[in-house]
Length: 303
Image (cartoon, rainbow, N blue to C red; front, side, top):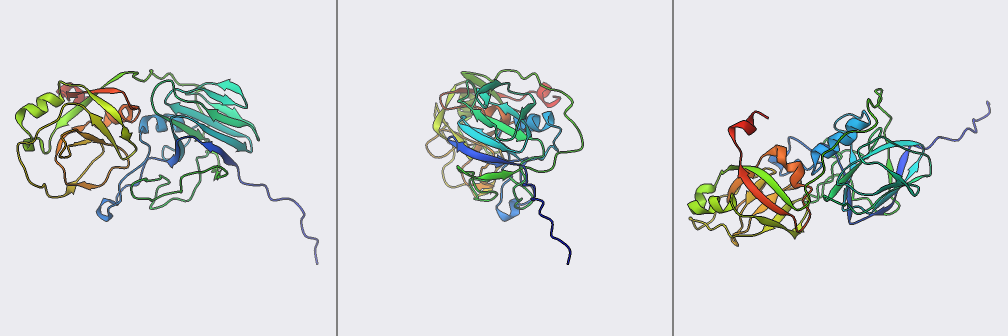
């Protein structure tokens, strides 16, 4: 009988979670094609920052990343890893030494990556070369907080496996990124589909007055405080499909802006819809941010 090999099995590279801050979830490009089952798309709230993090590392565009709400994340590298941090600008350190946002970061085995509270914005993204390799659910590794689908929310001690690195190599070390808006955000909208349920002046109010993001906001929707939008029609609207960016108006008259984990249907009228290109900036609006809405123009359609 031959001698058995005593070579140790090399563990799979991973990120060990030491602290999650307020909320850290695993996200990718989303879960498509299941709306008929009541399952929304989910995915990264700021999909542009998520895409940039993966692009910096030459990952596939749908590689899973960590979405970190208002900093506070601490992870330890299990094996030498290559990471990138994008989105809300925050202090980044590797074993206590400062590191740059929007750049390729080499994190040696045992080193600790830490994200502080953002200076601007709300959500930061941590990508690792090879992607977060948790098991997919219905074709996606995104955690949907409304539906309760996807990988569990990481907690202290969670080991997040890292997939094999892609064959391609990063083409740049860093990417130029414009600073996020600090105090006021302008979002373009398309009126409707239920603007006829409101008094004509309601749409004018929406497009001329400022609203403020309240602390009753999350990945599902952003509750706004500001001038009431009064209905012209009473009664109940039959339940109909909803999309990210919909400005739904409950009976109180203050709009709610649906984000990544929004419900797939709703019964309150939607006065307007924020264009998809502006949703990444909307996802970075923290409580207290002022938001103004403007109509999308024909020039915008060409962008």
